[in-house]
Image 1 (tube, each protein chain N blue to C red):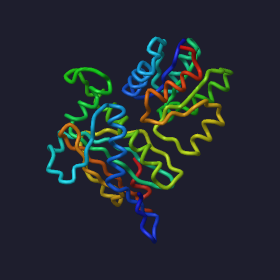
Image 2 (image 1 turned 60 degrees about the vertical axis):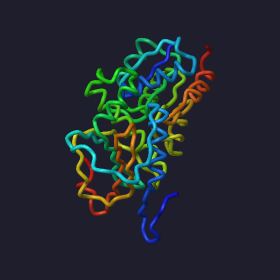
Image 3 (image 1 turned 90 degrees about the vertical axis):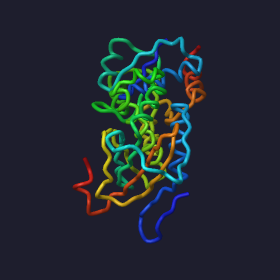
Image 4 (image 1 turned 45 degrees about the vertical axis):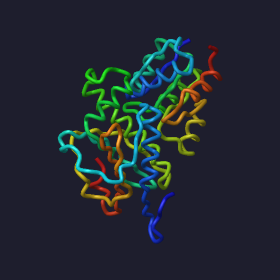
Length: 165
Length: 121
């Protein structure tokens, strides 16, 4: 399933693998279905997005992002906390996306060179593609009609001091 | 019978509670803590019969919590509920005395088997 460049340790996780990992978590934890979106269209403005991220350090060094509109993060939080949608607080929203991101990072870590550790998640309101790091996996998915984006960026050797936060 | 759930995410604590109910153990008293420090303080006051702990947490992580419990002489069945399950982590968990390691995402069936092994309904 993994494609590894012949002359380097570069690993790229295929879309199917990313989809399966996300779908497994969202289905079992939230009872929400996630589909592949092979023809993504422009999503909401970045202000309406939430981005969860974790750093993976060790045998593979990089960062994984799970980006989605607040609307679907709210649905996920409502499902996770088993509460009505309008009552979801900002804290519950961020807690949910952070946990989903952390779970995904932990699951994907097992597909990357070991041993590695996954950091605690960070959730931000804006998502900017990291300047540092090369793409190591990207998938556009949909859940309840809303887009979900997963991306991994591998830290390049010379970027040690700037990559960590 | 008391179960302690230790996780920095209240969402995950909620899911573990729901899963316990789905596994047929909704009648058990559930205690909760948001990190290892909070858990340790709670355990000293109100000892549970079984502990489900996350691994990665701020302040004191799950492994440090287990080690602290060992140092203080607690003999409570302790298991991890974690996103990671590398051989290295399983080795460390086992060496520290953890009885099981459940990987997220999980099912009620998995929890049911663990609870069946350590508790009587």
